[in-house]
Image 1: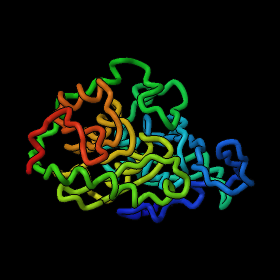
Image 2: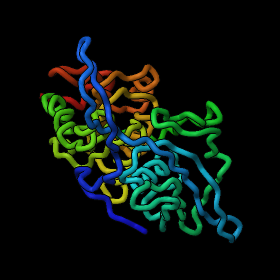
Image 3: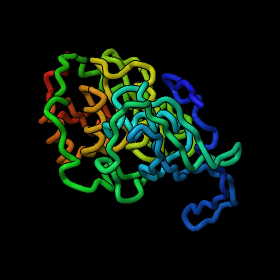
Image 4: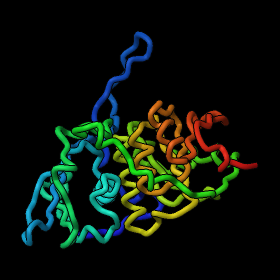
Length: 292
């Protein structure tokens, strides 16, 4: 069944995104009495595509991903978009969650692609499970990491340098499950004046970004100029690649970028900012978008 994403904050997130457990804390040499703690859930979700081939509908498993339940449909839209399987939200006509109930998150989703959509399963084959911490894991060749020159960002949006300092705190205060568990990443989209447009949480950095891109895609926010992506962790190649697919010109991360992320950002004209914390940050590419 189709659902509309709740924007901008994740108040509609699945209540099964965390689970209560008993813990015992050791303070120095003293063992304290047992007390309840909350942990972020990490559960598998198999993605199966149903698509048209030679005039018939066929189904094929695409990948198995580990994610935190909640906004699963957003994640599917964002993942398929960043993989180049869909180009717009209308390319998905419907989806079905299977093997779940009110007490257990679904472990399988069948995604129905529109008739006439060209899909080559061999070109998108992943060889093993996509873990929550892994993005390009499972790609079967170096060629699959190359990107077309047409993805270069030609967005001349200017933002005030001081605005960047505010983004991680705004994102943090809009993370209800992180505040409960301390165990989730977040990705958030902001306007060029700092308005929070979309935020999503997940135990995986890449999943959190897929959820943001998927929600924005369904709401018509992307592709659009002037957006800033803020992420809670380090920035790898695939974080930049997913932002490129969504035509996002500026990425600000609390953590460090990888060498390949910086190379990709420079090659495709993305402004990449790292270590955004403690009222400072590093600029790794395209500083001309920052003014003030």
